[in-house]
Length: 103
Image (cartoon, rainbow, N blue to C red; front, side, top):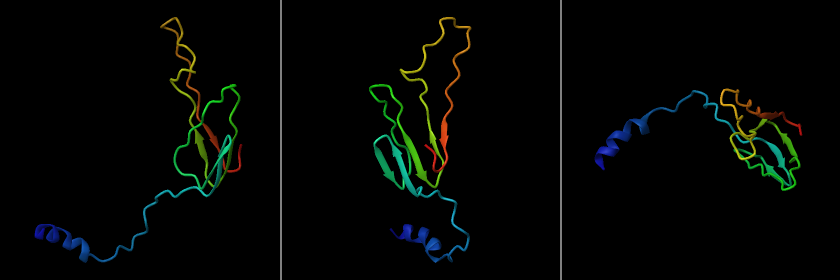
């Protein structure tokens, strides 16, 4: 235990750092609605379930941040690979980005 106190002593006695805080992201402010669910001050990743009837899911971005919707890749819904192996693979679907206030 004395060794730990000796190691930590320089840290405890150091002066306060006057540098600005690192740019750590904060939670978005506002509401994110996906289908029938609304999230308050969202942060992180949220599921986008497929509807049984195949209809689109409404997404409303009422936050102060852009959100990125990652589209399906390599899932069971992706088109089958071409039968000719020399044919180019289908291009991946690009991600969608919704700005604040977009649907």
